[in-house]
Image (cartoon, rainbow, N blue to C red):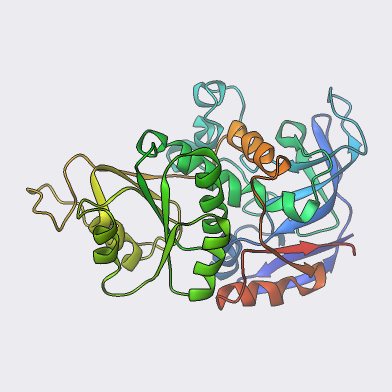
Length: 348
């Protein structure tokens, strides 16, 4: 089969490799589509080898079951689904309580094994996955389904964790209308009563946000926090969802979140919000506000995301590329040229 593999730091090659062999608790999926994420760019730019052998990238995976392990019940060949990306132990206290994304077996890093970030991923013709990671999608288009595995999962999880702030009369800010951000706007519109304000450096991305349900958009600039305060009677947004996570967006969140509000960090740009143990004076971190850095989501979050998509309440804006053009698609993502989510299609 073909696989798009990281062979050295920064070196991505389309290689011929054996079709994976599966164990008794595994499934072999014939890949129908694989989404491209900024995390893939992060892996591409790590200045050392993550493992000795080449690594197949891709953690947003949709496909068809080609083979079923001898010990697997309840799954059949020909079934269509997506892959839950947290390959957790399934038996620890967190997993048993439904918090598989912070599985105890992963230690303090709390990042369970994830395809394309350790185990081989889905930028290939086939992938081996644990049967427990398979989530059925029915007839949902593969290109629509694949990004749900992260773009919807991570967005849904962050929003669910701030739902108490999103009632009638509330205001939520979504920073960064990319692969995750444009999905988050739709999830907020479909599952909450909040009014959504969108922020991005691109006017085109704000047009996308409006189509997804945002009430208003702001091109990021020196006075964006002031504009948000102006729209909220000087108090600030009840929830700020930062899908970029650089220093400027972290500062914007600090300056625009309301007292008792919620700041949720989803983007991994390395920004550090200034939160000090000092009296609040109306410009820094406000009284009662919370900050939470969220990773992925739970299997339940993914099932809910699939339900939104199959009901027509969530549609991912996708750009489709052949598997052989994976590096070109990643380069376009790095240059900010992708609208929504880039998706690799192994077969026409």
